[in-house]
Amino acid sequence: MHSITENKDKKYFILSGKKGFFSRYADNGFKTKWTGLWKNSQKYLEYYAIKGLEENKCIKTEYDYAKAIHYYDKAVETVFVPENKAGLYVKIVFGKEEERELELGFNIRKREENLTERKYKVKFDKKKNEIIVGNELGQISFSLIKGKMRFEEKREEKIHFPSGEKQNCFIPGKILLKGKEIIFGLIPEPEKEQNKMEKKGKKEIKRKKGKREKILNERELKKEIKEREIEFGQKEKLIKTNLKELEKGFVDSAKGISLLENQGNYFAGYPWFLQYWGRDNLWSLNSLIFLGEFEKAKKVLGYFWKKNQKGKIPNFIEGKKTHFNSIDASLLFLIGLKDYVFASGNRKILKEIKWEKTLKFLESQEKDELIFHEGNETWMDSIQRKGAGIEIQALYLKALHSIRNLLVLQGKEKETREIEKKAIELNKSILHNFQSGGAYKDLINEKNEFVKSCNPLVYLMQKQASEQEIEVFESEEFNGKKGVLTRGRNEFGFGFEGYHTGLSWSLVNGWMACAEFKADRTEKGLEYLMLLINDLKDDCVGGIGECWNSSGELRGCGMQFWGHAFVIKCIDEFLLGIKLNAFEKKVFLQPKLPEKMNYLKRRLRIGNSFFDLIVEKKKGKIKAKTTNKKIKIEVY
Image (cartoon, rainbow, N blue to C red; front, top):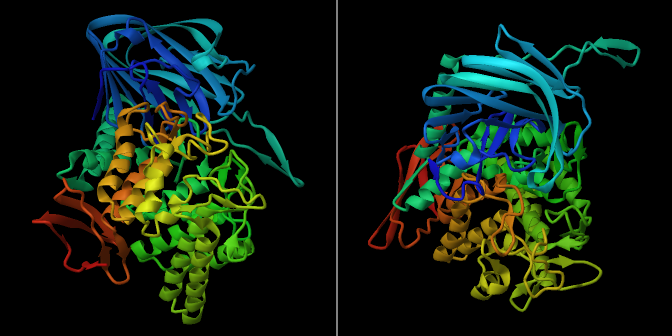
């Protein structure tokens, strides 16, 4: 539970299900164009306001991922989004029966839009206590579930400037609600088709009207809230350790990942990366695997594989549009596929996913062992980096090791030897082309510039870095208030607000923590890991943000998938050194417990078996055991 009593006007929260999300500030305000109620990537509700429960009257807000509760002097307001149904539910309890005015501001628009000129229609059903507001994009219904209501239609169009950006919204009229306890729901509906006719070749097809989402009654709502609370409560059983801040950080990161799930895939980040990004999903895939969510990991792999283009994995998908400007998504796909296969024991997927196509595509991008890419094909897509980026070569090296393991599993000895040789040659080429005096180049290109960036950390996550190599990134030149900067302060092109040329990123802090653990610098690794965990209290409460300037001000999404995922990855893959092998029924382990940690228990899954891994430190010695005798431990 997060309890927010200070800076409520600067902190917001996210509630979401698999069909939509709701964002609001802790003081109950709607301060940006991203707050309000969304269904997938379309906005419906701009704000709602209840007279007497204004922003300055909210004393405290509690948030537990399942719901948020606002406390006022003589009222308590609970807001909730169901897991599998679109919509927002609000419950207000007063000390006595009250009559309060409710103002609803609707803004049905697409994600990328600002000011629009769409016309709204209003329908009021007095018998059902229901108001329906819509335009050509869709409609949203307000339904009173408990209490009494009066509605006077008085249409008003309003222009306002949340966070300085011009927006318009529609107010249908004056709504008066009465009761000691009032409950209402706001339900976004599918686009109204109005029996349009489409032509497909010579055949005419009648498009069906979308089915309206059923409003929950009071009993059903209570049940939904309880089930959601239980679901998030289960996350607390995933880890136990005497280092309570790390334990809470792990649990809350797992809860945040659940909120980012949308229709069988994952959004890259709330509140505005409302697309399915290959890069983000695949950097984060092994967090799902470590959390035992094999079925969800398989869905992610299957989704992006179905969209592949001659083996190339998409960068992102938004609606019907698929974008392929990514070289790293294909590399991360191969790494994730191997992790999934060995943890789940599902080798049948290798018949469905012909990973050889992706390897063939990558080999077509090779020149002198290195992979070359276009300027916007790396994660730093706001700048031109045409050439051979070091993080791409590092991921290629990791992908080749992953392929090697898949080939061993398939019993292909000749191909295994060829890939092993290829990986050795690639590593030599990385050292020859990128390493210079204890530092690494960011990019090989025609200009032959030596720019110090954060990208060599991806290589140092695999290689046990020397003190000289890792201390470059621990220096003041490379660190801001929120962690590692994307580019050194003394480098040409560094910008205080540079998205990929100066900001600190949760992704990069994750890389740094992993590289520190890999280099046996456990306390330093914990320090960078805690930068991620501590952000759960800031900006988007319960979320780990995307990026910040060197003063620590948020400059991106407040809840980013890979920020949460790297907390899981850092702890499981690098702090504990976990490698799962369902075929041998083994947990390979290389634990590196920080000085203050003497006990850690993790709930894990191999194949269909769930078990606890227990790691203890006594008199300086680390011992490990499992609660399932069939699952063996091998320390490497």
